[in-house]
Amino acid sequence: MKSLFYYNWQVRDEWFKALETVPDTELWRERNGGLGSFLKTMLHLIDVEYSWVRAVNNETDIPIQMDEYKDLKSVKELSDRLRMELRVFIEQWQDEMEYEQVTSSWGGETFYKSEIMRHVIVHEVHHVGQLSIWAKEIGIPVVSANFIDRDLMKPSTVR
Amino acid sequence: MKSLFYYNWQVRDEWFKALETVPDTELWRERNGGLGSFLKTMLHLIDVEYSWVRAVNNETDIPIQMDEYKDLKSVKELSDRLRMELRVFIEQWQDEMEYEQVTSSWGGETFYKSEIMRHVIVHEVHHVGQLSIWAKEIGIPVVSANFIDRDLMKPSTVR
Image (cartoon, rainbow over all chains, first blue to last red; front, top):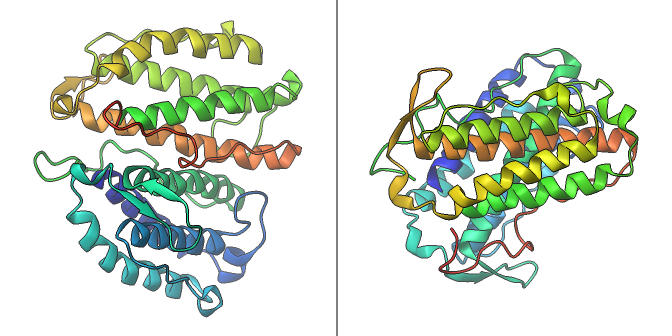
């Protein structure tokens, strides 16, 4: 579980790096499908991950004020800042927590923690697949989606 | 781990269903990014999953003869047929297998089984994100990428 979060974080940071070469006007431009622009997608990934992981941790939602983030740099800073908080939680994740139940503070629905964690993981991978289509459209290199060759599995440290 | 394979299989079958309304000429049409067409993507997902899971199971690769599959129906039949074989293996997956090592029969590189399994999972989710962009382009409904609300976590049966 942890390793898939670390995978998403590595890939997200590589996308932030790849997008540095692109003007902000292009990053905000409306595109077909998904969230509609590179930066809206990045903000959405950060927001969804933060809300759901807080729910798993029995904490109330703190919605992101989307209009405060005007450029790639500020979105990356937000990602870095919230990740510091999330990392503390993810690092102490234990398989025994999988079937504990939680109720989201916004929808009131009850889930297994394991369901939410997997939901967050596939949510990001799915949207990153969309970024790769738009990257081809504007002619920038596509970040690898490979899990192998990232040194993500370290025995007895993560799963 | 198992639940993420079951997730991919559910989502893949929903895409097969959604694509039934689309003429085969549209499904083969070259599109921007990814594998370039709906059916090439579906064949690629089936091929990559089958090859890697066989590698995890210490079996040699049996490449798919791509040009034998001319339409959605035959690609779906291939997916169903190979899944019967894969399901037997996935169902008996145990967490203790994660750090066993295997060498792929085609590249000769050695991996942890856990790395390969996660690679296969994110590979499919990534490409399905691309399908969702193309689906919007041709005006068909997009299959949900949600992991929640699919009843995928059943305590003491899967993880």
